[in-house]
Length: 192
Image (cartoon, rainbow, N blue to C red; front, top):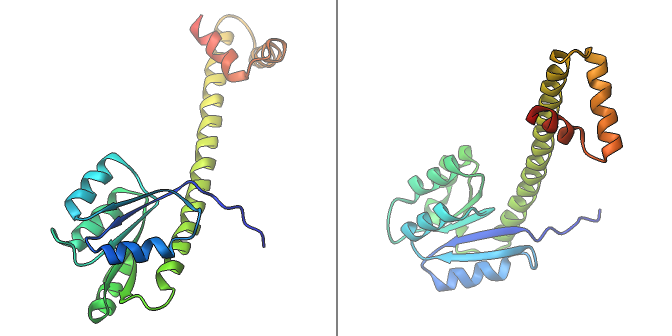
């Protein structure tokens, strides 16, 4: 199955370990990200997330400041980002069981297999579906807005003496003759 490669993804790595940051950069699927940012502390990452949104956030524990679980929950509650939390093997089971209900992927370190790469690819797939859903929602909202405007314009025309059918026909005919959308015609009627 051929899949279109989307290069509109962004990733934030939160880690004070240069070795970890290098490892993550090596396993990131090539050509998929237009933005890869690294912050070395929770506080720097929090500031970054106030200014920018990311598709994926990878957090390497332990963080030098703050309690990572609170940070993870804040990201989960306030954003539509995929989250990967990398923890030491000795706490992996406990942390993974706690975070799974939040939709946070937990990966054990040291990272010996391709679990991090697979996790990133999984989140990319989910983010792709989220982006497509957002586009569909936007299209539907635009269509609903157009229908509301046209209905309001028809009501104005009915108040001016047309029947509902005549008002509907007038809007369609005017849109076709002027090369405008029904929404634009309705806005003109409402502005008069």
